[in-house]
Length: 455
Ligand SMILES: *Cc1c(COP(=O)(O)O)cnc(C)c1O
Image 1 (cartoon, rainbow, N blue to C red):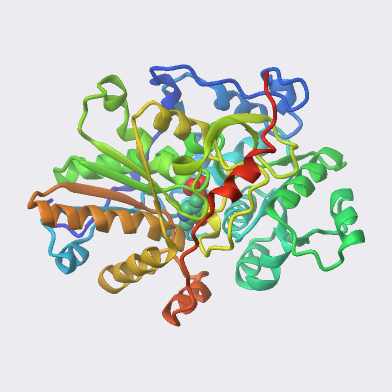
Image 2 (image 1 turned 30 degrees about the vertical axis):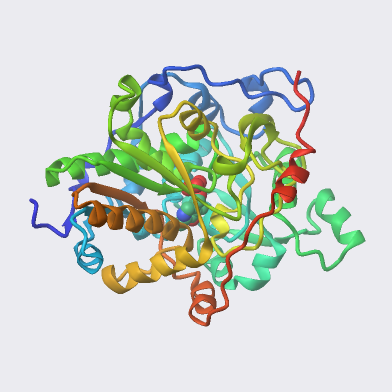
């Protein structure tokens, strides 16, 4: 097997269960709190927004959770995804390291996000939901959900941040092709949207406002409607473990064991889904030498520069309070091109692993990230999403370190998506217009002054 460029699993190797890391954590997860009472939330608090099965998965301690057959049937449209050995990149870097990448860019939406969208829509369908509303910034989550809703015959309404709606028409066209209704946020369809439009008809919108609109939509709609989130929550990371489970099997087939695992982090779902299935051994034996690295943009450095505190998941302070590394819910990241990584907080599962020393975090700047993305495109052929290029940057850095130290290590990263809808960002880089953003400490301090007080 070791001379293969792609390690391909057959459809019969598609995992039958998701891996739930909560079964193996050697510590307790802090409870999620109600924003009003500051008491732990119960299932009843979440029931207006999510189907019961997803609420159960959120707190489940079962190690394995069966993937329903209708979900596996849709997964089979593109899964199992290939694991590639990046031989041409290795050659270019003249490194003794072996570099592998799991290729999630082959999904119809072009990223890992449909892995959870399909599962979430399935459970909604099962429990009688007729329509789902969500928000989208850059459009990746909206397109994954539109695809999944189309597959199960559920209506999909996407509140797309106005500035992206105007600037990124192709993601919108993709969502509409899959049958979704897409409106710019602020929209006249909700009270939250109308209020903003009344004071500023040209408002560019924000992710926080789009979340408020989607949530208002589902709680006021006459048709049974639910809300859906593309990252951060435990059940989202659970569904993404199909990525790591396949990768583990593929590395075994290749006869290799990973020394270093790398993934980029926005809300933590592609990283968690990729890395968690490799972690059970390390969680039992902390002296394990396998390193696991989460890579974030220097412009939104929640793990490397955030505080560990209870905070809201959204700008409008409507969500439950989550204990996490946060830059503050009021933090508005600079408009960097990796739109999917511009989040103030982080998945609590990822945060606790970091706090307990099981994973590392690294922040990288934009220019070095695009440079790595282009080096990857020119050797391996695939144009990576700017988000994924963060993982590539660190994979290349680790491979270069292997060269300096004269040691071979097996480096595996998750290619979370392709960059075919991000060509304007590449254009800017190629024209020398991308600049590094140095985030002043004062800006973080200011956003963190508004953290909620929790007794
Ligand atoms: C959304 C997205 C991310 C970041 O989100 P996570 O929840 O951290 O995975 C990364 N890569 C791509 C291609 C994305 O679409």
